[in-house]
Length: 383
Image (cartoon, rainbow, N blue to C red):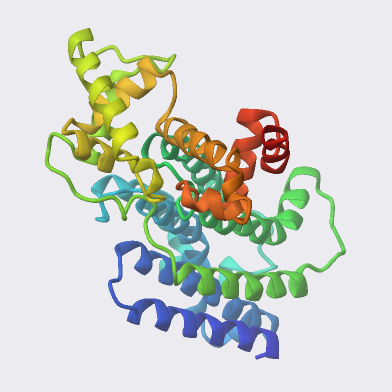
């Protein structure tokens, strides 16, 4: 085995062991370990096919068929579980195995009769059902990559309704993981796709590049993936009336296309009471100073359900939770910057005192809300 293939395989084994032996494992950890295993399988297969070893061990063909058809579905399910509060495998995820089932049926002659025919260069024509199986086999992973990206975009919109800070829940890790997979797919499918669509033969050999990218990819997802937790896992558990599941269920069914609530809408009297409690709480206790504040935590403080609080913030303040809380933080920073007694503090220190936990988020929101940088604001209002 070449040094690079061997290094990648060792990395894969190392990170799989680290992930599977860490404390407080979640179900997505097993999926990530399996995803790394599939990438390691690719490196082994690359070496085997380069040295024609599969001729002596036809069973290798099974690994070649199934590692590829399972890569995309594994990434997709890992993403779904990572962004869910409920870290359990759900039966609806089984649909991701449909491509593998179809490939098993359509490739039955290679799987159950003559596996070496799968890679034979002598066989130039195939039955139509084999061609269909080949399309499913080759391109199911790109389809699941697209589904993964669409899922991430959908849930990115949910974050601003749950959290007052995007740090650690901004889905960057999952975007890096998915887009790295896209690069991997491109290197493996580009030549085949061009040959199939245009009957052009590209002379450039992607073998060395694909192995380098795979090794780097394994290192990246192993190193950073080891530390990952589910996006909604750090939300506290509440009772049925104020829990996150209640919010997600009601929000899913109560909004029309414009984001307005239609069913289970609270009446004006109840809304007024919630608004009053909310304003008193924000003025007297300043819960926004807690950088990890989220919607269920705030709802619990004023004794209302999360979905009702979400309705009030959306409808009566015309804001999502993220913007609502950070407006208070911006105002707090402004009051501190306007006071010359705080001149010995750095601006970012005042931001952290006001509830921010990200320098980038603070500066972006401040400039967006005030049209000035924090430094310009301090100079203007103190002069």
